Length: 289
Figure 1 (cartoon, rainbow, N blue to C red):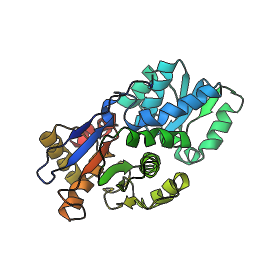
Figure 2 (cartoon, one colour):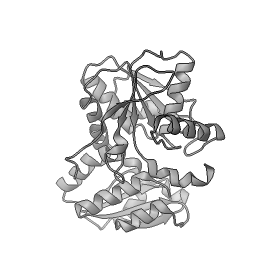
Figure 3 (cartoon, helix red, strand yellow):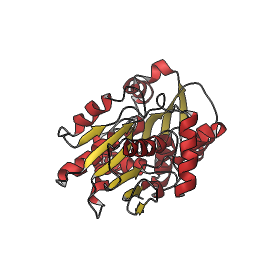
């Protein structure tokens, strides 16, 4: 399932940039999308090596990670269960999870905070159960995301990615360090107080000299938006033909354009943006467009 990968690098035509490129991880798979595909690649390999056939994970009601895990489990002949944060609801994302055979356990927000305790409570006696943290955060996920750098045929002055847990960013930084590149990795946290992501990244990759954090582009916090961001999404997509989502990639591309406007990055700099997929999350905000 993880042998074939289609993620080309394409040049974006935007007036302010001469050398802006995007790594199209959103094209890898419609359901195991972008960085989710890369994170799950080695997570599932480890589960198989440990003879586990029941994937147990965590996420919100519009989680791309839940859909990706459900799809990956189904294609691999595995069972899957998810603890879903909040009260019981029905939506497009959870429908996909259930169609892929995932069992959903809706969990109050306080209990959800202690994920290992939830796993222990429900699956202590299930020797086939395999714990996957929210978003797939793990050493295996970092290894998978580091392969993005290995796939590049060119060297870039700057690489940009959006960040929720920092796992993808850690993988990118690992790839940059291993390949002895001078490339700056620009990470755009999509939640408030995103400075903690530097600490999360350093847990995996202690050498962070190439890391630059931009914490002012969260638009109010995780999954929070503003009319300005939605206008940016509409204009950007209409002008480039590239679909972006309000939670992650729109905030990243907004940051890139704003930083160029402020002369933090130059119009002639060679820039690569990582499109981490997650486009199904748009359905959670369809009423705002």
